[in-house]
Image 1 (cartoon, one colour):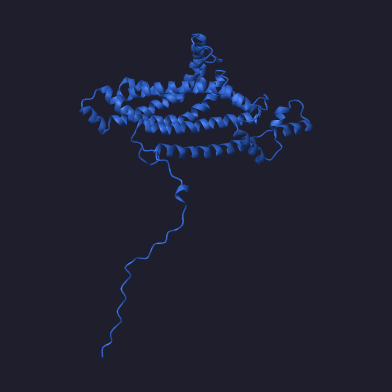
Image 2: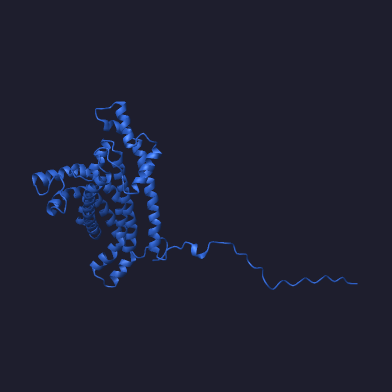
Amino acid sequence: MTLTQPAESAPSAEPPKATRRPGLPAALKLRAPRNPMAAYLLRRLRQSVITLFLVSVVVFAGIRALPGDPALALAGEERSPEALAAIRAEYGLDDNIVIQYGRFIAHALTGDLGTSSRTGLPVSDAIAEALPVTLELAALSLLFAVVLGIGAGVVAAVRRGRPEEWLANAVALLGLSVPSFWLGIVLVLAFAIAFPVFAASGYVPFGTDPLDNLRRMVLPAVVLGSGLAAVVMRQTRAAMLDSLSADYIRTARAKGLSRREVIGGHALRNSLVTVVTVLGLQLGHLISGAVVTEQIFVLPGFGKLTIDAVFTRDYATLQGVVLCTSAAYILINLLVDVAYSVIDPRIRLGGAAR
């Protein structure tokens, strides 16, 4: 007698239905912008806000960690305990540092950077008066550095091994090694005293007298932009030498393009990405270097405002100046990143195609 095993049941024809996890409605899901440029700018804007917040914390805490009491500087000869206590209460210096910072941020978000303890005027008004001077100085210095640096760098690369390259390298080395204050003194003695072509000090708004404004701003712009011009020249020369030895340059020459088209339309255009990167990194030094230059030429810009605030322990003015400078530096770096895609369309922003 043979034992027969029971037949196995046939598998079900219908597969088990997958269970769907509950999620957010489609209307509530956040969608990234379709434009990669917009997505990149939005992400960088968030990073810039966080960076500016961290800068404000460091600046606020760092200024108050400096030795000395601002109440003593404000009291003058009347330094009785009652007078010092009244000054601290008036400016909120007797509050906890967290309370002081919270009050500062709340007012700063409305555009109120506080009141100067030195002049009694709003800090925003003082910054509005000094900002055009520093912006004009920085713009003229940048223009001088870009024109001279890129021009000399291109000449040094094209005329490699010839006297033009040696002269450009010597001038660049001189611009990097000479201190700005010494260069300023020499230029004043030469072009403002011995040969009075330019003015030695003072400031006249461009809208009041454009010619007199340029007479007073040329020398400070040369002093401030000389170091940057040397850096731009060296970077332009190195980038141009790399571009001129690339395969696409040989291809362009083989196609019969003129020397000007090869250098200006291909080699220089691809080299500008490196130059823009250097400019973005050096603009912070350009803004900080304006402090020394404005002191030499007696310009009423951010430099004078910062020095006066430091010596008088003017917390509000110093905080406002540093925050505005940091915001300008962050904005400049954002513009530099955007400029990459304009100069070289091959660059993808945010890892996505444009």
